Length: 89
Image (cartoon, rainbow, N blue to C red; front, side):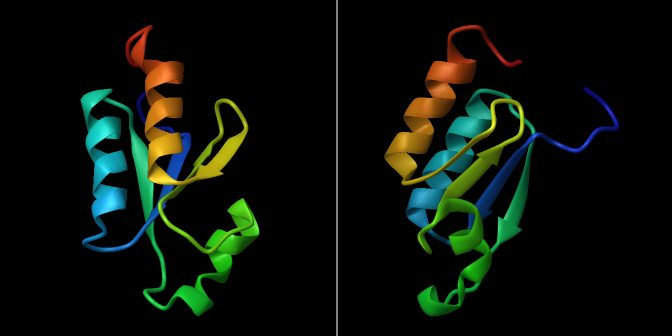
């Protein structure tokens, strides 16, 4: 997959341990993704609220499957179930 935009967008905060957990899994699964760093102020994370309905990070949007979700544990489980068993898509 060269030259195309990554299909996964990760909304994250700098130095957020939950975000880093998701980054680690994305890298382990060799998935290309786009990082969007969000506002540190919880009340100003409107971009995340628009896509996921919550202001919490991490949040991902996967264009491949149409999935949008937040909560790092759910994202890790989703990534491993979707891309882990069959190797990197």
